[in-house]
Image 1 (tube, one colour):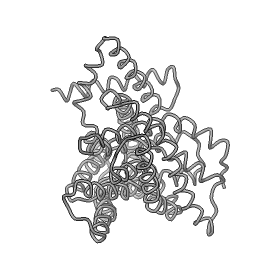
Image 2 (cartoon, helix red, strand yellow):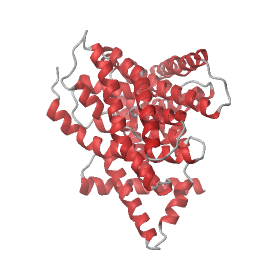
Image 3 (cartoon, rainbow, N blue to C red):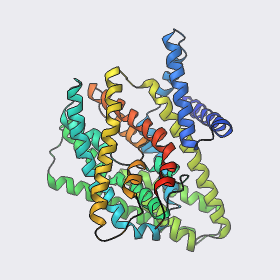
Image 4 (cartoon, helix red, strand yellow):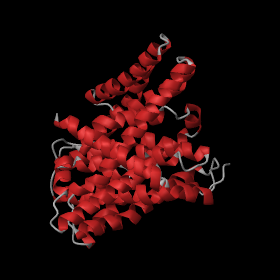
Length: 412
């Protein structure tokens, strides 16, 4: 019953904030609802400072939400499938080397840069955090968030080729990031011996195994879709694919996110073209667009309200603010090296490095990974830094990426 009440409150807030944003602010929905939730949180904190303890009830509500489980084992599969459903596989294949490089070497490069700079910076402001924890922060903050990216970039009029690079990278870079995070986490906990062979095996199992599994369950769903012509049944099959496929992939210790992305790409291209009637495509698109909008609104409301339960101090806030240029520099460097090498053999949209850097938004996945760390002072500072970078990324980068594109990009 408490879970039902919690869902009812979050959906009501999401609807209310979406209405206020659409009626008055006119911002992209994800940005608008998060901004309203963030302002509300700050107001509640301010009221608490003058002994009006309303925020106490809000904190109790949020304390009942396990953000990591709600996103990583709940909403994420639906959001990834909805995003992948409308990505053109042919466009993605044309950019495969760029996307693959950014989602692998780019993530590793950024993790190392952020990790080293974080350790030095925290030492400089008298926050002693072990180097491995700093690398953990680098791993969780380096990947661009597909939820934030797909929700904002599609409204920014990015040139098609560049939009494919940004969207494709965001959909696939979770595999490498999660492997890095898991390996570093095991080193921090110290329960298992980590070797080069175990790292390679983990990558193959998580990323390639997840992709193969997604292709298999996607093909099974495709054959089922092609054998019936009833949009209610076909929509239900896609829901089962998302929920069952994601759960089974995680149970088999495969990458659930990569599996669902691959399955979504398969259904969104082969399935839509060969296994569905026009009526089914219309209903399927409407359903998944609605799911995408609702869950995005709920997620970004949660991100905005999460500040109520985070441990913030002046030094934590300072560390978070100083992390913003460091994370951007690491992104610029990793993208610049990757594209600089590939420019020897192919052309890119003008100012591609600048746009890919600023369009590399961070979001809920980074927050969820930070909140999965074991309790302790290291976790508190990493969560605070992560939250600060994510809020800046969504509000500042998300609101200005369109202007940057209009100013610097021309389709080539």
